[in-house]
Image (cartoon, rainbow, N blue to C red; front, side, top):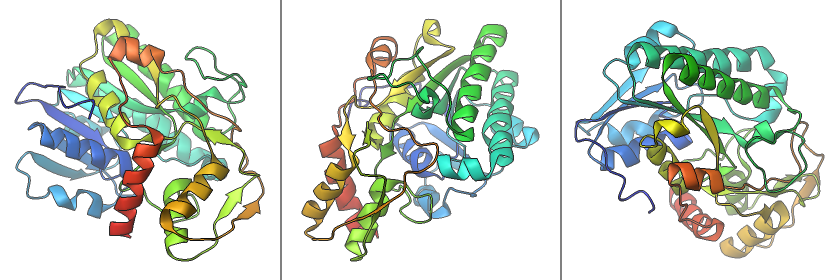
Length: 324
């Protein structure tokens, strides 16, 4: 792991919003292993209680069921906190197109509430989830911070707005903020169920059950799939990043590029099944290709992702085989 040597003060207190979700629960686990205190805030709208029940016997763990759309809840949750890892948001490009008002309230106003609560409580560092969707229709690869295209979905709009608000809080209020532009994160505890499930866990579950998966489009779209361990590293290192790096957003990825059709057949081979996929229409709002330049995160955060796509997918397959 590339974050084994990341050290925090013994009594450091972390608040992880969306802590019962896929990324959030993995962050809670990593922080607890470092001997720090973790306060998990989640309304369980998309997160799962079972993701954090494993921490209930941990003396350094506290769970608050609450909604980031409520400022009072955010203020109470931030009391006595050193570092905020703000992961609370609703994902899914297609769902955001169906629910634009909710996405604005949850992803923008909710994040703004957390920024204000962190400011009022004197939080040292505010690290938050952004997304590669902010690159929109910019066709150039790899994706570079500062070269963004037209946004293609309400979800992308919410993440871009979060970045702008975070910049304001660094500029005017002295709150050190760091945006994590995640590129297609995958790994243990990612939900394989539902119409908006991420593609890797969904394919794995369907193939294990002998079902025929559907690939949206021709399968030639490419993504910079990023294993969860790399994301944990980025968040923890951002908490120790210098003030000079604050107010900015960073690509968090491995820096590779995988085609969906290749991933599909790789999964069938790894799982020992011979199932041909169905092909459906392209999803509205989706970008065709994605690949990150991670040099800025390396330079300013010390980010050095140690998990390649292949290493990550091998681990993920084993986890799902044992937990589905």
